[in-house]
Image 1 (tube, rainbow, N blue to C red):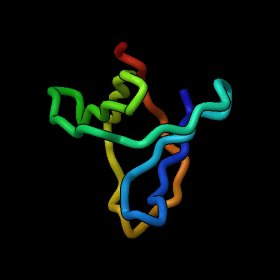
Image 2 (cartoon, rainbow, N blue to C red):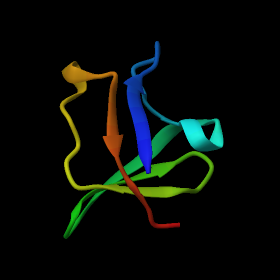
Image 3 (cartoon, rainbow, N blue to C red):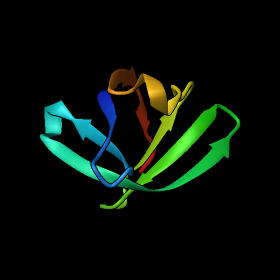
Image 4 (cartoon, helix red, strand yellow):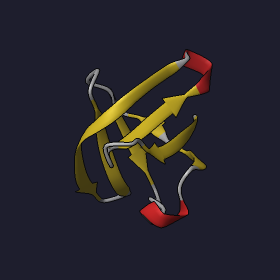
Length: 67
């Protein structure tokens, strides 16, 4: 699924999923075999093959929902 990553005013990474009209803060980042897994405040886990550097945000990237 396509998601947009950005930093909010507090400096926290935020994920926006347009198809679900969902915007949540990232509460945890972990490494996996396939890349980086971000855990959102609502409990979703999204896996990214490549996570861009924060200075390149906002950016739309492809993610896979794990849970």
